[in-house]
Amino acid sequence: RAKQDGRGVFSFFEPSLDRAARARRQLELDLRGALRTGQFRLEFQPIFDLKAERIGGLEALLRWDHPTRGLITPGEFIPVAEETGLIVAMGEWVLHEACRQALAWPEDVRIAVNVSPLQFRNSGFTNVVFQALTRSGLAPQRLEIEITESVFLDGADAVVALLHRLRALGVRIALDDFGTGYSSLSYLRSFPFDKLKIDRSFVANVASDESAGAIVDAIVHLAGALNMDTTAEGVEDPQQLESLRLHGCGSIQGFLFSQPIRGAAVASLLEQRASQAA
Ligand code: C2E
Ligand code: MG
Ligand code: MG
Ligand code: MG
Image 1 (cartoon, rainbow, N blue to C red):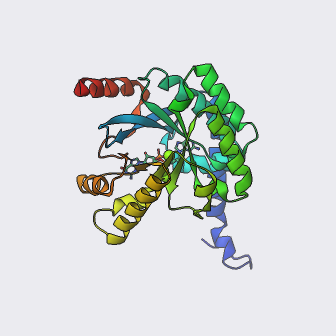
Image 2 (cartoon, helix red, strand yellow):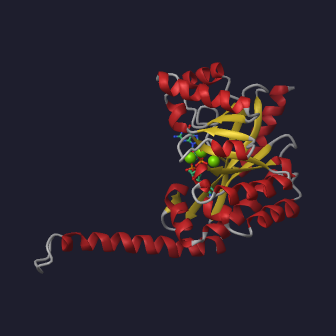
Image 3 (cartoon, helix red, strand yellow):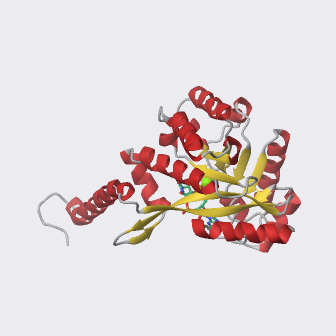
């Protein structure tokens, strides 16, 4: 219902723009309270090592149980958390909680934690990682920090220096969603990542599309030459798995093997693993 106030078509959109702005503002307000009132929890998705044929680690994925809206996924609230700076406090909670829970798992199982660019660039970040390790007592080599290529957008030198400081703590560093960012491969020369996570968009068509297959093959070879592991993200069907095996991919993660699961379910999943191996 356009208002006839002489300002043309723009007024037609005003009510809905207003609604969107208010919903966004409400989400921001809710997000501020969520950390304080314990509405966040972590789920964990196993990463299956194809050579060792076992779960080598799990990735922590943040979940928000909103009191009235129900479950809200990170795709919706992480961008708001980034814009408002709330991501710094949320990310600190994630690191502490992930390390705390991982301490109960077998020592050869790692925990991977996503870190957003703003959180990563925050001056206290190295100290937050250090605190999470010391307070939980988790061995540093069991923690893997996942960053995306976007952290390199403004000033690679400072980022590389920071990565080296983190590495000095003993933690591992993985490059998430590899191949989708503003990849200049030059940063692979300036920092030895521990792992490349091959983005789901390549994995989706790895068995069906020649160019996707060629890209996965190239990433696996590049990683091998630079002494990095590879994990294929978003593996959903056996054809993809078979193709990834043939390409020599190191590990897989996706609905085919397991959805993200609750913390309480991790122990029994890892026990199953132990009894199968025995
Ligand atoms: P990501 O780090 O690339 O995580 C993988 C995402 O793919 C997860 O979505 C996971 O549930 C989903 N996934 C796993 N297997 C499959 C599959 O087989 N098929 C499909 N279609 N999807 C699959 P989720 O949990 O919604 O997280 C989305 C993104 O939000 C993550 O992408 C990560 O960038 C971000 N995120 C999640 N937790 C955190 C966190 O604690 N901190 C920060 N900064 N970001 C987080
Ligand atoms: Mg990730
Ligand atoms: Mg990813
Ligand atoms: Mg992703």
